[in-house]
Image (cartoon, rainbow, N blue to C red; front, side, top):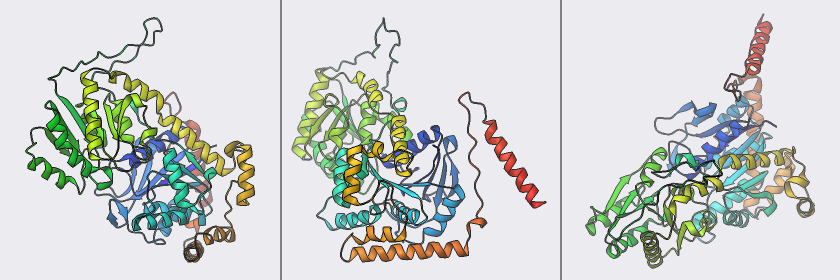
Amino acid sequence: MRYNIAMISDYFFPQPGGVESHIYQLSSKLIDRGHKVIIITHAYKGRTGVRYLTNGLKVYHVPFFVIYRETTFPTVFSFFPIFRDIIIRERIEIVHGHGSLSSLCNEAILHGRTMGLRAVFTDHSLFGFADAGSILTNKLLKFTLSDVDHVICVSHTCKENTVLRASLDPLMVSVIPNAVVAENFRPLNYVEPSEDGQTGTRLPPINLLGPDDTITIVVISRLFYNKGTDLLIAAIPRILASHKHVRFIIAGSGPKAIDLEQMVERNVLQDRVEMLGPVRHEEVRDVMVRGQIYLHPSLTEAFGTVIVEAASCGLYVVCTQVGGIPEVLPARMTQFAKPEEDDLVAATGRAIAALRANKVRTERFHDQVKMMYSWTDVAARTERVYEGISGALPEEEFYGIHAAGAWTATRGRAGVQSFALMDRLKRYYGCGIWAGKLFCLCVVIDYLIFVALEMIYPRSGIDIAKDWPKKRIDGSPNRDKFASLNRSRSSRHRDKR
């Protein structure tokens, strides 16, 4: 089946990051599979209005006020009029939101359900349960996911975290990891494997490192506290003091960049620590191939796409053993460390020693990563979620025969969510003694706004956007598509006459 899908999040290009790359790559592969996909995000500097990306991917940059880390100011209801206009104009059937902290995502799922659309949410982050920020975020997530059709998490650890935070039935949550475009992250001297079974697989030449050869450690990250920048600041002087022929290349920006620069100046490490500042996503590979080790000191991480990209470039990965990171790469590609200064320094030392002793065959990493992660596979699995929530896939097949029966018995409903207002209010009312009543009030107001918009701005007054012309596999234009457009034009002319 062909679906019209709206990917909605505050986080998208030109801002670099894992969520941004995930949305773009998933959307592109879904378009390749025959679906229509648009992206709704806020306006960035120099990017406003409507833009078309590769393969007809349309991006709506909505002009909303940004308050912190590219997140828009939450207004709950003010996004509804323009959201409704876009949804009707593009004939959207499924709303797919990304990011727990994205205001546009949370509001779009609420409005989409009010308009009778199927809703999917993808969680890319991990949150705690003790601090005030996490408590408020978890309550907001519980509000959003009380009336969602299905949830996707990027790792099993992320699934456990999301199920606990939002009090979800685990059957409502699927695990679909991120992926990487391996062709865009090749090692510097990569040699394509031979397809001749007799000659076997060709491997790039092994770069043997001598005791006096320089080893470069690469760090590419947003310089925030949760990314372990304080841990990095403490570890770099100790690593460089213990290893004479080692240097660092650090790329990224954030509020901790000043602290990092002060550390470099205080320890007089300007000749051994190169700071590049922010880099574009298409420049990441060129930075990575300059090194032999990738250091990822994050304090919390649901998946960590950047470490997959680093391994694909042939780098040995040193990373903290937190969140979903241990699920991403096999042990032969990584050195794990506790999120502590001493253990991170020790793990980096073990990685340096392993490379100097040539115990790690990093030239094999690219082909292995290419076999493990594929955006085509991610798109196929996401498509199956769409089929499950729309009823195209039998409930027994989507959830499992025994699981579906247990779910219906415990939840009192089938896998497909009801759009009835009373059913929605029942789901929201169970979110808490006071929060449940507040959530129900928000839903009622949202429904009244929807009714008012239907009366003031009827659907008949909104122009329907033409779909991007598709191409056949052989590259020739789809004549059936153009023929249908011509027939619709001629019918409108006859109506005018």
